[in-house]
Length: 104
Length: 305
Image 1 (cartoon, chains in turn blue, purple):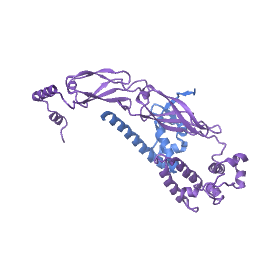
Image 2 (image 1 turned 135 degrees about the vertical axis):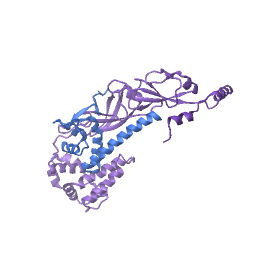
Image 3 (image 1 turned 30 degrees about the horizontal axis):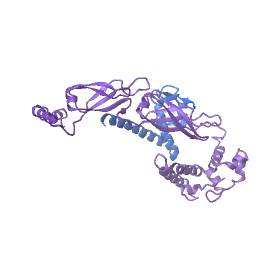
Image 4 (image 1 turned 45 degrees about the vertical axis):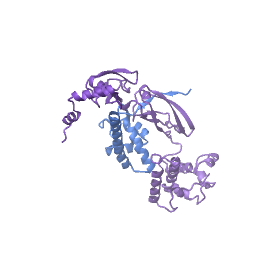
């Protein structure tokens, strides 16, 4: 019988992680993540704190945009644009699920 | 070692410049990307293009590759002796290496930034799992089939109660093994809920259609309705119109905080397709005495601008 794994981290607003953890999770360097912050595409929970902390819900879109960047050999600014569109897609998908549930 | 024709893989001439190579790669990557193409060989073709591009976009690796000359794809060949000297693996592993791995290793050594003995994180595993509403509510156990450098393995994972559609979960350190002391990869799961024959989920709230007869909707009724647990009696108030939502508080899906969403019954008034003589008589009597006109009522509520 194999071991059963229970230690899930929920990638939502309730979980937080620091810059190093985010860098590891998104396969992007700290310098690249800082550049995304400068572009306004990534926001730490409290920008005034010396140690930057992020909500875990930013991991999934960052991973998706980072993978597309690697797959197509794109520059970092494309990640900024993709993050905006990924956020809009997620919001619209959630609204669609909600409308379908309520009005089907 | 087998020769691979990277120029043919990208369909570019051997004297193509970097722009031509990049353009050819992006075109193929777009065509065969697993997110875009559903062809069974899409992933393999995408990987072939990516492997060719990884070498040809790097001037140093491209020069080393060009040293091999032009050979038929798949032909056995021996790399130049200096490659062996530059590579730190033993003679046996050198002969068994794949051309792409060898070129990648050379790139790391020449680049200096990523030496082959540097700690490397294990590869992450990412997948979407489709689970039923009941499993999302109560939690469930899944078997994930993971394919990594060591072959295929099965990992039993327990999905906690309270997940919803669109939820993302991470299981640390259970992906591919790290190398040279690097951390093991993680597992990322995207949750999708399978369509349910009765309920529709909006985050942790559930909706279902409650079919009522005209007299149940008009007079009110006690109706047995389904829930995720056991059926319960729902009081339908008199005068319940079609589309009205009746809430059963705390009968929706569990959430991660241990609370539950609500269950909504959406009223749908239905009529019999055929009527008995007596039923027709009663309806005709009602039609004769009723002053209710739903067209007038809805026109008052929703005036046209």
